[in-house]
Image (spheres, rainbow, N blue to C red):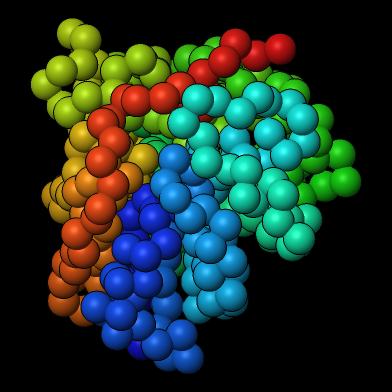
Length: 286
């Protein structure tokens, strides 16, 4: 069985189909991991959701910030932003089934056999594997409960910006969500900076990419993630970064996670510029 990971798709359905064809993906025998952000900003988010859902157990996807934004919009707890391309999903006849399926997806997936962890954005330096799994479970439990809509009332915002073991309530769930779906830079104490989105070297003094923080408690894991199009493809020090800017006219990338770690790319036809439109999940919590 081949196990592949694919970076952020964001509604680029044609490129996804081309990439699956390039890797000769066989859902009967292979498995594909998606780094999240299946939807938004690209032209065919509805088709992407339907296609990934149809893959069944041969696909594993974690939730990204754009996926959560879609769920919040659908529940009436967030406005559509300039540049969002979610209308086709929101008006689709199978809308409810697709959104219910999306809400059941995890924030994190760990494969002990591959010693590999899948997240959308990153992990705080204070979390080891057990802590990360426990924190992911906290948010997943709320999202899968009958009271899930309340979560979206409290999801947005940048505070708190550092982990504490005694965080509680919505502050705790918001920090966990931001860690898994928005993290790029933090300082040595684990304080996040959500404003810096450029490539390493452009961040404020004192901040580093989350995976370069010395002594982080999860540095023994191979972590596969997306979210960071200006970072691009990186495979080093137990990290695999897979957001190669498909939405911005660059590439959609897959890497084989078992055996030879081969990289596969398809060119994309989008012509947007990184940073255009309003970023999701940055609105002050209400």
